[in-house]
Image (cartoon, rainbow, N blue to C red; front, top):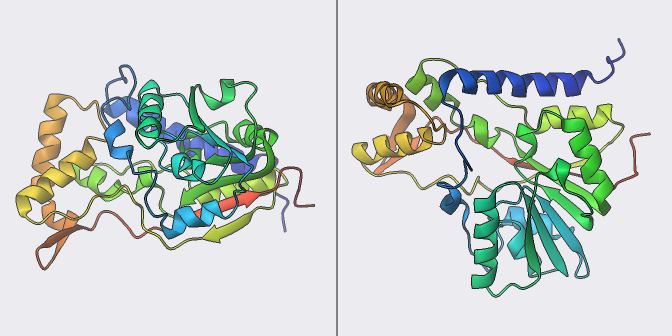
Length: 289
């Protein structure tokens, strides 16, 4: 068997992100300010909810005396429930809007052992914990090797990175193609990440979970609501010009039967493929050799 080229997986990983970035730059206007400012409400959840199976699987790795670092933890959908089971959680996120939402939810839920640090992970200093999480973040990280190395350096006992078999930023690929007339450039997912880890000498445990992606809304119940659901999903690819958005709306209206199937009263989005969550976890310092 021909030996793998050094850093081949990491190079392919970065190339996929560069292709997506180039497509975004060509089709959309530059971002202005904090891109999460208007969308932050979508990421709220009750920290005291009963953990679903996927969250419970993560909690199995956390001990009562642990400090847990959540890299890119957003509004705290993962970290704040975990804070109820451990000594402290620290959310490191570059978005001021997400950090403010995290702090507000923590206060509202009476959680005093959670704090947000507004910082890009690669620029953050002096942050370490027993367990380090990075959930739905790695898809966007072109410099994946130094990112992983820093996660491992910050973790005293365990690193846990998740990924969906169809990554969330790729789940609207058919909608994107119908609306904008070209295929969506796909970001790397957990399979590509595992290849990078192997290349780095890390042999992780990989667990495939059964729960659904929680941020997808329930299906609409009318044609008009289906159209609005598709347009709302398209707005995640924000900064379209008014003319481009008008054309996209017309394309969606014409292609609505490609994007939904009717089940009783529900218009079920067919552009969202079935996906399963993977937990990719390892102990720092333990290598494949």
